[in-house]
Image (cartoon, rainbow, N blue to C red; front, top):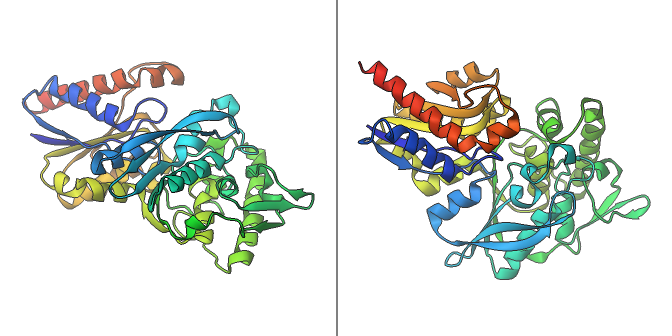
Amino acid sequence: MRVVIAPDSFKGSMKSSEAAKRIQQGIQSVFPDWTCERIPVADGGEGTLDAILTATGGYKVPSTVQDPLGRMMRAEWGYCEDRKLAVIETAAASGLSLLTEKELDPYRASTFGTGQLVKEALDRGAQEVVLGLGGSATVDAGVGFFSALGVDFYNRAGMINRPAGGHLGEIEWMDVSRMDPRLKTVRMTIAFDVSNPLLGPEGAISIFGSQKGVQAEETAFFEAGMQRFAEQIIHLTGRDVRSDPGSGAAGGFGFALRSLLDVTFQRGFELIAELTGLERRIRKADMVITGEGKVDRQSLYGKVPMGISKIARDYNVPVVVFAGKVEEEQMEAQKEGISVILPIVDGPMSLKTAMDRGPELLEAASRRFAYILVLSKQ
């Protein structure tokens, strides 16, 4: 058997490279002669940096920037010297994984640190930037990012010192005259992980707000703020991209990038699949094993397992998905060509325990799956 192992990261528990290694160890503990090819993948969120650097070469650059709440932290981004290519994850400086559940604060959380990373990349001489949008802790529509790169935002009282999600509804105007001019010349590809529009029942707040700390009674406030800010941007640029795929990604960050810069949007999974030759490898495989932290409603909006299944379906290659948690959308996902979705948690435990034990649970789950295959062959 030839098996392609191509998981996403299990957010907050393990990187995609670690997940692939654990799956292989579980499978080969039962089938040592099987050929397993590990391909770490990502969808634009956590793991995008490692996946692209694995495919293209380059090195990681440590930087000191602001986290979502303005605290100084160490974050890494990638640089390929020969291509002058910078690879930056929004999650690295503005991500959910940087905050505890109690720290989630959609009013204060900002993408400022991500803007600082892009500025550092430009200072190093980057001529091309891949910016992954997934995994943000923010609903600030990118105002923090642009603030770090010279754009000033004003309300009736004057300039807003650290614009964030809670300020969107009060922004009266913005001054883009001091925006870093290099943003106009650098080639920027936006790797997005979800195709949601900015507003409405499928938009940034309605679908993703709760995971970033937006309470049910606050939804209308943040939706109204996002709508008002969008109207300000449309008035400034003369462009309305609210409904374009990915405009709702990263708490509306996608919308601001589409509106204010000349960028190319590409699904993060598709970008990495191209760089790694994933389709060619799946075509030669007998089975594909993938996985992610949680299979839920968001998984149906273009996450890694869906992307894998669409490729594999064209070549009649079965797809197995391991997940830390499986919600009610499992059957919908299986309609998309996934053969089986298997939770890795093997007993009652807290979320923290499950995440801390994620690597060993994944390896054990893949071993159990392999033993089931033994029985099926008898």
